Length: 420
Image (tube, rainbow, N blue to C red):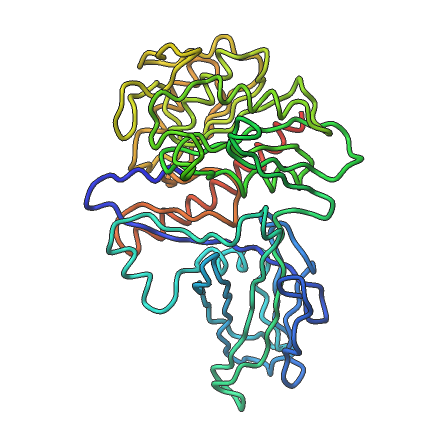
């Protein structure tokens, strides 16, 4: 995601969705292994799946309670550094002793996860963007989420009465990953391929914005799990020895084109349907590729876009080049794009005017999805990446929730577009 600082008032907000799954009537597995016994007095969690993709909702219920018992339900996970994230909600069992969170209530719980141990206030106060990241899909195909329930009333007051470990998948069984390096592939990134034997589908090239690094790797993994060969590309800040620059400065479109041409050749890829997906500053490159490389790229998906080419970031001579020649700043034409251009933006974007840019792109022939209450972080799949902007406390959470809703709606539409 584009983590562009907008001044000392910029704050970080997190509304993490870790949609999880388990099978009804028993304990689910966590991290690929069996869960320990979790219920007391017949209290148990039931869900509609045992394993779920990271962008799929889950229906969670707690059963076996005494009628009208009040409980606290918690969701917990660890990030790639072993730090804990958690969220809780309080509910009252119905007359049958059941708490029905459903998929919407479960999503709200899971989208509210924040760092524990006082780290949330410290991070928000720092004004820096922060987000939950489990291990990258190339190393950790799934991650565990722990649900627990503590009684707030009744004879078991203060006791944990149920627990369940659930599995969240980035890559389905049979999907593969290969690390790409500049030294061997002339590209820095990750290649994810769906299980063999399926129909050829639109491949997707994914990259992020001003945050740098390989920001699209989780998205590319999920796309492969949906049957689309996908590649996440790092084009700057790719680490020592990568040979890539440390800023958006003289980034040649030939680099992305080379990645797209490699992706088109992969098993399961329909080479005529290659889509490019860029976020924030990366939306500029995505539009330029659709416009200037129509023989390679068909569709363009631009999240939190700019309708113009902007200057280098954080400094330099020019942001983008084409065959070594600077691409001038100013409006990006879309008249040569072979397929569909989809602009996804938030009306409450405090980083830049992405909603206005989406409107300008629509005047040039693009389709637009604008979510009035959402901010800058409308990008990619739902139930995973948090919003990171807004005012303090309540304003932060409101924007983050709107971002989550925007991702849920737009991701569904993006997958439909890719399937056409």
